[in-house]
Image (tube, rainbow, N blue to C red; front, side, top):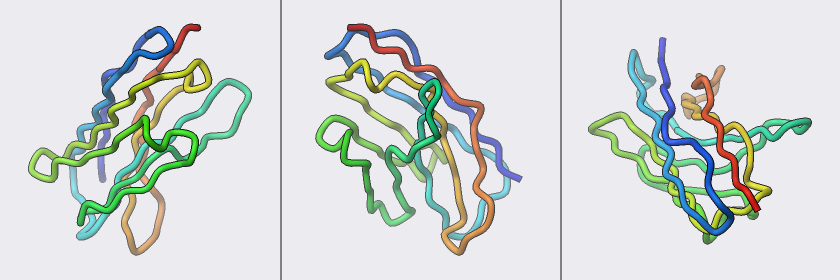
Length: 117
């Protein structure tokens, strides 16, 4: 079992920054990816950014150049630095951890990010 705990959400004005953290604990797969997803009211959950153990990252187009995902393997923690925030970034942000070989991903409880215009 894996437990994920997110922190760092909040209310920020457009153009501002926030840093999300996700601390993982428990029994991890040998090789796993960690990532961030978000879900806005009335919308489906969408992928935001991901990072694998080797450090390779990928992003949804709408956040490229503004968000940066990073991973501290020693602390089993993944971060999402969000800059130049826009009102459309408002959502509940969820951390995920998944075995690269497949299977059900683990999810955190989510943290609210609200960007005011």
